[in-house]
Length: 315
Length: 315
Image 1 (tube, chains in turn cyan, red):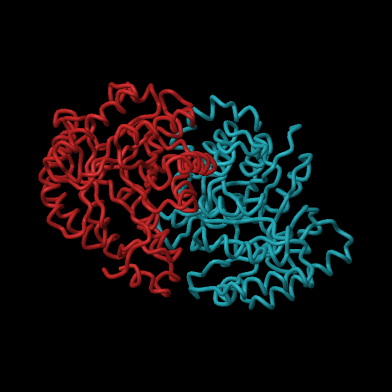
Image 2: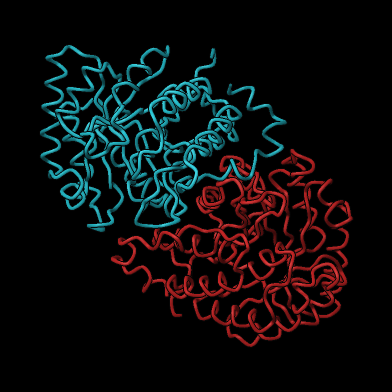
């Protein structure tokens, strides 16, 4: 791994993907195998789980063990989601490199999902920052602004409100931000407009884009943010993370498709597509019967990509 | 229909879609119903079939009857594909508004598919132009440059060769051009580079983009050409047109998804998404068991789109 990657495709399948599958399908050993093989395929940032109460998301109850293992892999950024101060305390104790605190820009979604208003979430981020400072920990705090492009409960989400909340998160002590199209509502022009607006205000502290492919525009939206200079993207192996309320509708953009996109464009992601596709096949086997997404695993790599030996270059 | 659409989403499902389904699944009455309801949904350009020998593509043998019907619909641009002068003669006799003559920029694909070199196809376009001039017909000739972004037989296709052939087609008498990613190899940066190159040379005579979504990048590629000023796009209802050699791999970009993209962006396509989705459901029923694509039909329209009443605006 001597080549410095120019984009980071951040694996969030173990968290965003698995949390959307109601039953616990993977045991801890399988998750450790996933993390190890993702690492071997060149992934250097993995969201391994979420410090939420096990009674709410039993399928993520082994997050602490996953963080402990992930920390043993040199150069891996180990990320977790935290819903509140209690979760953040666990994340700080676990030694995770990064904790993502979700905030829903849709007030209706925020109340339904987090049982807090967005401004209450901002206040909680302030407490999390204080806890980190007291602990003297290095765990980064990323504010994940979700439903930034619309909400399936509330409908329209005001762009100025997204900007206000983004600024409030940074003021409260978040180190950086991501914008998420949680419900797959975004289109590329809207993405461009909102990312530009927030980038103008906060610069490179907006450093991650999170898209779902629910309505077929995930890759177009992601490409639009790449064009704006975003270089870090969330994705789920096998495109898991589909919405249970929309049967057949695909989930997060698929990691292997995003890596394929960048390989095709000659942009280094540091990931080896062949190893990634082998891991995808294994995980797809474990998740047999669940809704999977992604195109490249079905269609196969184009002849042009093997010819150009991009796979060797990115490995 | 008082609002002038700013993009044309050209239906090619009756030709590119149905020709990729080996068996004849639709009878002529069903196709007439498809054309009528597509027209009622606001479609104003439909490629109804192909003047190829019936023994090669029996599923398109009723093209003449379809053209005759389509010509009765006011304001509809009736398009057909023609593989050679013989087909063009039929197209001219039928009174079609537009004939698309495919040329494969990949020499290997051209020989395998059309049994001619690309330059022999250029020569044939010269003959077709002469036939049109002799007939005094108004049927436009569009050169469709396929495998422009790579070929599953040959692999890499040289961009300068695509440009040379595009210019040669215009020199030989084609009125205008489209570029097609026939095998789903393109990525958005490549699309941008090649469209820019050809646009610089021929201006708005390059007026159509044709993408397959085989590897998940169809919509991103299409969006990249929209950003460059392209305003006419081929698409297949229900995303039919998948490649029989890649089971599960999706086909052409889905008409309803492309119309959804533009509706989301507030760009007028003149098409009514609700009517289009109703037609999509009907055609999907007729094609039960075939590989279908497209996302919006599965996921449903976002709340934001109904709120904004884009559907009323575009209808």
